[in-house]
Image (cartoon, rainbow, N blue to C red; front, side, top):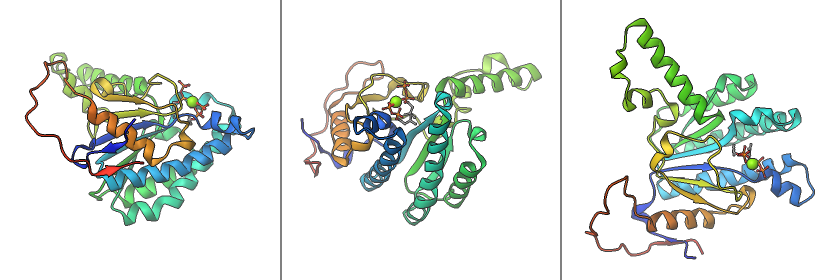
Length: 255
Ligand code: IPE
Ligand code: IPE
Ligand code: MG
């Protein structure tokens, strides 16, 4: 399969479920945390690659609301790695004009992680380059419930008419939709499921599932996903548009 991509048709918004760290470690007879650490190196190269490609929004599913149910040691190790990642990447994020933000139940994060996240978020808030969103303690259902609760409260206090509750009103309360719906959603690790990620925004996202475990995911694999995206025809429930433009010459090859 070709991983040659057209630079003019790179998806603006990419969201990735970074799955497979645990299996990567188990395959090597190592503790799961070794897989998470290896996965953090993949985060670095994929963030860099997306920035080079001109992706506007990159959202990474790093820790789900449900992941709190994992063994204490794994959760603690993941939190330590998160803090380490934020401290180590701070300079690169700031020097490259990247804007960092977190979505999810951030108040559930330990103070040391929240502090590191807030520091980089604040320092990068005016940056105009790519926005890197980390989904931490994130759940798509939880996010929708929270928005529904806010709308219900506004209706109850009389500041909002029930008829005014529409898609726009709900969407405006979803942090995951602040930067728009993903064009391309990638999941590594071979599982064919959404696992509570961006349930609202994924309505018309193009999905790409890769068998590659996240620590093994290379820039070439990202190019494969983008190349697949570029071969898709997005219809949004409508009939196919007529082809009006000539194919663009290929500009970048992943192999
Ligand atoms: C994804 O890798 C990272 C997190 C969920 C935090 P996993 O830890 O789920 O790895 P597998 O799916 O068990 O291999
Ligand atoms: C999804 O992966 C969450 C993240 C990658 C952060 P999981 O490993 O938690 O999902 P399931 O359990 O396979 O559905
Ligand atoms: Mg998993």
